[in-house]
Length: 229
Image (tube, rainbow, N blue to C red; front, top):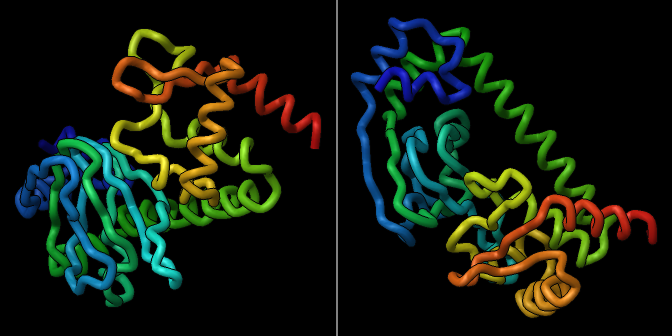
């Protein structure tokens, strides 16, 4: 278990004594696809470690629309902000497939982890990465047209196909509505552009309906879009 804990960025620089404490206090929880792990507004304050699987982070906008914010995958954590500021959960977290989570209590995080210099430094670096990523995301949403925004998000929401390094597959379980909210466009626009991209042979779908990206074709498409701006 300690070997798996070490894979998380926030624990990579921590000593063995602290890792053993983490192992001792860690509660492992398995969940099926489509399960809500946390709800926006919940008062729970645990720290969650994603040991296996993928989770979708969403938020409810003022107009009632559900907006997709991020995908979290194995080796990432969530829930630390509510522990730090004491506020209710700022987003809803839902499993996209089977997931395995490690859960650490608020008390353990505050009294043990937060007092460890290496853990605190790693947590600050994680926050810095989140801010930088958000800045890039905002810039792309402001400056790109709908087709480019969708392609950029499809790349971001995809993973490499094992044995085929030139191909990527969009994360299973993401609806056109969810993808559209990542890109700042409607579900109908996603469906239309996906159809256009398939016709133009920029992307394809497999027998399960999953979107397949060819790195070369997507790169050429993005280059042509940039050239026309």
